[in-house]
Length: 353
Image 1 (tube, helix red, strand yellow):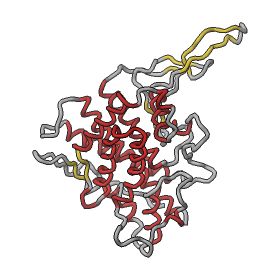
Image 2: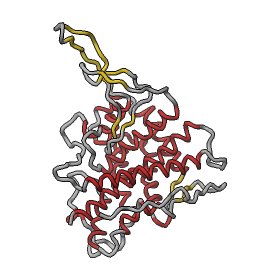
Image 3: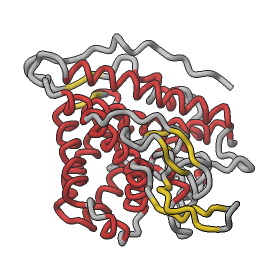
Image 4: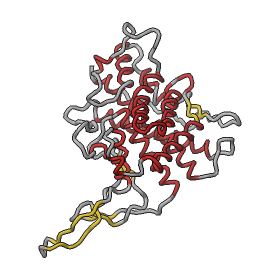
């Protein structure tokens, strides 16, 4: 299997002039995005399969690639499929479903569709800091006003609502209480707090609330020791933004998750989140590792670039560290999830004839 090259991205041109709010990503980010399609150049069938894959979610309800393939012969001339519109489709569909549930309160999330267009279009590959601010404002509004009530959110059976609730609970430890038996004496020892290890994303990476108790229980019998850290507004604000965007893009793209992921522990058997099945892997384990590494690298570089931009002395700089940490995290997770989606599609069409 051909390995992806990794072009150093730290030299990406950063537009921080007095009138520009854009981080320009046109020069070298191709290694993470459009190069997936570029690697298929010359094979028109696989190119169309790749495009079809990126226009839909990865769960079982999606059409098989051979059926969903959009070919030049069947495509409408009046509505060509562009790089931006094919990535926009699953994102916009989810935005509309959220809007149907909460009304105008979700209007701000349409900014995600615009951000996808900016990122996906090779002629203007960029991140708009103005749009990024609007997005983080919408996420903060959601956390503080719309879905703080867990009971109300639990009534929503949509995948996004179930993921958001599960991810938030896991991040804060999914705290429960249990009776601790004293097996030697045959009596009840007392009540213990049972706490999860934190939110595990679809790739297996763990994020947890920094103030989670250092001494906790994973069940009524066995305790574990965790290194708790002090609660920091920058960390918490960034984490809540991460949790929200992970839930949103997982609901939109539904890239299969590894076994320990929180997404696979939803309290329902209806429409479960797709798992990465090792007995019938959609892509090889080596390919899965490659996609994960590339996605994490992209997040790291874009986070760094955004942090430099929002902490700079230009028009769009800020001296508020909490806001800066939130913006850079939002940018990094946003790009990571798009790379996961496209990378998974690339290996699906290249490893399965």
